[in-house]
Length: 296
Image (cartoon, rainbow, N blue to C red):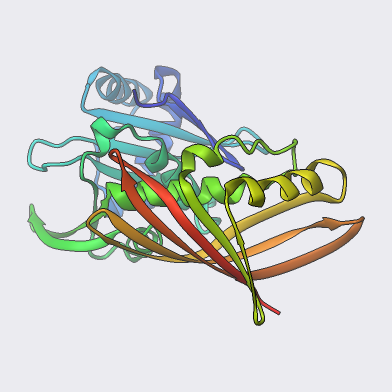
């Protein structure tokens, strides 16, 4: 089932409802929408309401309204549409001018992609954009979509991008692994590590000439201790860039990461590099090995 509400660090995404029609009226008549998506001939609030009702009634269209947690302001939409002329669902995004350039579209689109069920993901998700919409193209590349083909529609040049279901799933698993150790809001829950990893997974820390090799239990236990006894507080570790290669049922992801927190009451920051090795086990991607090294 597709989620009706999706939460991120900064955003709340809710399935579009009829009372959102005035926001939709503003969005579809904004300069960016008119230039890159097209005039929907919505001239009144009544037109906007009819437009929203049509979207809600269709089993092949899903719109999420994106709001900011900080002030509850509506910023944009994420769309998911199964078109008759395309084999797979395509995802889209549109934001009001005052909310572009702050990373909201990336954050919201990524959250929707990671929430989609297998029945929607199938093998891949598509994205269609105008050739002239350089901002959209840049965002799709940041989301790791790859260019597939050029389309011509009503005299306009469109670009079709694609993102594999495997890439989405591996990205979600990687971010979930990083989040295991976050104690900024509450004590971390380490139980999901056993769903994220194979039972024989190994985790290796490289430091200079030394390599410390762990199984899941030997890796988790000391980290659970320092993250819950006050030694390491307000800790977070997160991916800042990545490269993923998938071949059949195996994959590798190179991650650059940053981390920060309070160690014995003293603030620190760090960064480093991780390699994740994945394998498909009983139809699901799992982490088989992690090896990392902090930058000195």
